[in-house]
Length: 390
Image 1 (cartoon, rainbow, N blue to C red):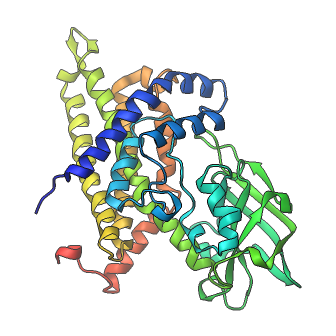
Image 2: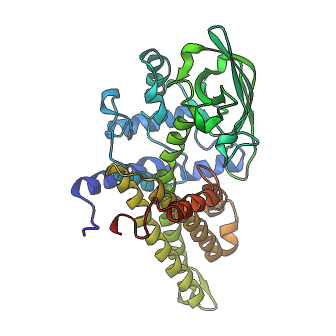
Image 3: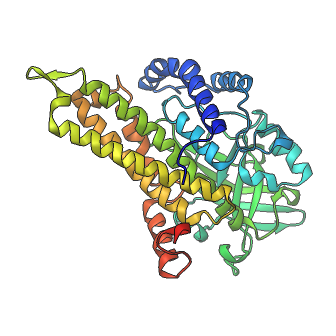
């Protein structure tokens, strides 16, 4: 059993770390300043410039198939890269990506939606969540009714990431109420903003914010159906499943950076004539954080490994998402406590992380949904205790 990284994995990770350290981290103080002034931390043009710099390093389209100019990296490699991205709070992501389900598009749709998204010319958003359908995605109500060669969409989506900036939305709508979403009654549509939907900003405790999308008699051509009629729920679950190992991978990077800040602070901050790192209370917070961080690392890497092995990743990914999201919340909380009053200010990124990572226990599947999946798999005999080693 070999827990070491391959030479290729180590080389890719180190290259990404070098890029993040040299090109992205120097922007951190300006990002904090802008966010304190209630401005976007990074503008769209600045993000595009950073992505083009990364492209010169060879990083473009991490998960995008090579035929579309991407790297088509294995899941474990992507997990390692997402961890490195988590080491900075600058809202940066590599370019050349598109929603994984857009690859189900027709050739005409690929020219109109997929390729411009990969090139960064268009921004997409994925819309399945509704005011009454969050964890229970099968309970969606936004309706699409056939009208000749078009479909008419009516309803609302909410908490949609990129919804305020998107040029088009991938919308999962009910096309056959009697069948129900799970049984072929939902369909995915590619809907340009120009077709008439509007977005409304939702203020959250984190930076930026999602959107509500309002569809009031929005007319969509039949040719804009993504995949097949009735395939919407299946595509939606495929889209959501992608985040089950990338989100906790990102959380690991945040926890690594935050914990190092706590260690550095504990070795320099003095109270009562001694470094605070000599206090057992501080030592135990650091020890607990390192232990949980290491446990999360291997749960998440194993979930990515199951993807690369062609195995069903849902059970392992749910454990990685559940534990990784909880871990980063606990670590950042301890780091803030170690920093005391300074940790609570907006001069440091700690309180920013504190607000940011709380979302990790909610989006792309709440803690409660992950527990439901894990327990159901065991109770119904879909998997065994010990996983692939059982």
